[in-house]
Figure 1 (spheres, rainbow, N blue to C red):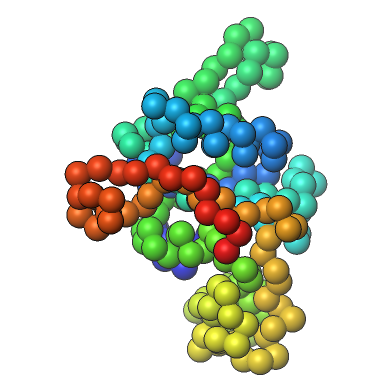
Figure 2: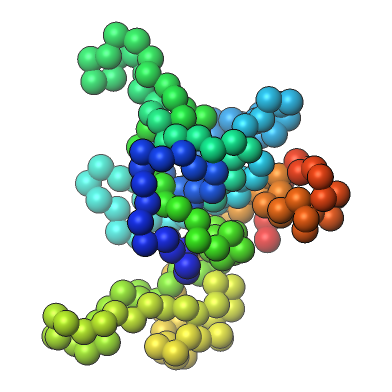
Length: 210
């Protein structure tokens, strides 16, 4: 997902900071859900940023669109589940944790190693270079280390050590359409760095398209 990534993620632990990706959702419902959280005094989130991105290589059970996001909870919470009555022969709802808050069970989570990096990555204009990213440095060598594209997320002319001008066609546009965001709510700043006051977090209205 993001440039800086945690090596291990404990799915059974409680988490405050999470990167998330989802392929099964309703855009209007999800947008409304998040907006309503940040209008409520009982909002469980401190910060959410997400955008809808094109899935260029969807699997059989996936759509050609997914949500890419980062969230910060006010309290550490387990991943949980979101299963409605009738699903998998369930007689009643089974709703808990972060999945319950997002109302999406089929959601992939990863830990956040760098908040700043995850925030940038979530709002990116361009994807990583498909020609080089996660490809072996030495071709046809199973022991070769991999290349990791670190090109600028917003400027195609700023290349990493592996890429060059010829890589531009391999850096696809990230967002799905003109109404895909990024959408941003709340603040990810720590209390000490919060311009609104070091002892409070301030929820704010969504940012405009960046």
